[in-house]
Image (cartoon, rainbow over all chains, first blue to last red; front, side):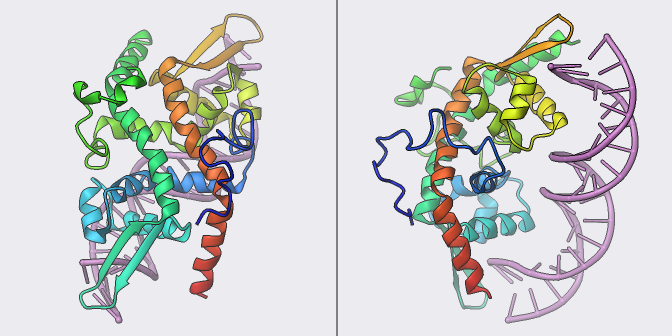
Length: 137
Length: 137
DNA sequence: CGGCATCCAAAAAGATACTG
DNA sequence: CAGTATCTTTTTGGATGCCG
């Protein structure tokens, strides 16, 4: 789970920097993790699983527009990173359930505010785009 | 527009869910916004600009590994979405400054916890990957 | 049902050269 | 300096077919 990183709980904004870590600066491992989490389908999988354990097909139905291949690929990446738990029951036909690990839930809980923000900002962004496009017409 | 709406946000027509909006469900406009914000370089630009106004070249130096082309492209997208403000002084040589709009700052503030989490979780994720890889060797 | 392997089209990303 | 234009490479994603 959390490798002893949570020394001061949530109190400390963060142990590290004035602003934040060096994800921005270099090609560090944190960047790699970020890319998996905020990948096109990664965010949606995390959000979906925040609702609870789900089977592959249910997940596919829940996430609009994802192909079988991409969903499988995304799930594998997240599973490997320890964010998603895969439980396969050895029956025929196969029955596989996906859920969030504690680590994955942490990630998902940080993704959610972003999704809510995006949803709430549709009007503002749309207006901005119109102004932008108009100004260059 | 302001984030305070979150507590009792039923008033806003968007917030309809216990968990979150239907970004997951369909190919809605919110999804498009999300993709811009959490795009590979989008996150990093937002995080960088959270530190303050910056010129193009400074931004390029601040964000490791970004190409000139991708930075310009990302900035344009974010500017069009109304998240980034571009101010060009008509001098030679050109002097262009980039900063976050209030809307962009909202987005950036929601991205930051994710970046901090990623940074703090490097060890946990690395360990998970080793376990995963080992289990299939 | 829940994958994986393969092939192919499309989009993203990088390198480089050029311009106001 | 801050881009744009162009070209090439890499990655992504969809469509199939097969298998446990």
